[in-house]
Image (cartoon, rainbow, N blue to C red; front, side, top):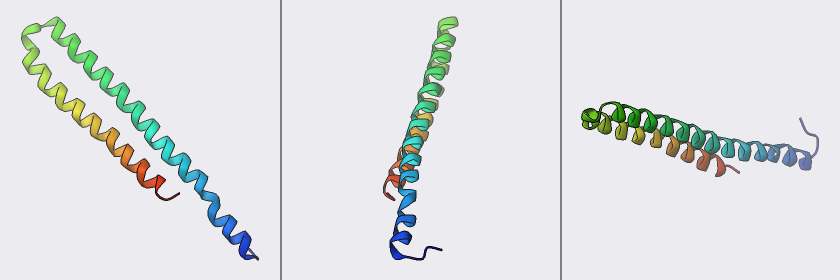
Length: 88
């Protein structure tokens, strides 16, 4: 328990750096994970289409749906980072 008011204010404001770090890490990890997942999904879909061009309509639609879901996770990380940044 701080004895003086200035120490209490300093102690209360010391977590701002950690919140900023958390916001930065949230968007960085979210973007990195989304990028790797989208690259792997597109590579797998293109590999499947190259092996069997007749399967293109069956592969393309689920791939686009999967890419959209991956992108929503990246946007969710962005929203979390934005909300954390608002606490600074």
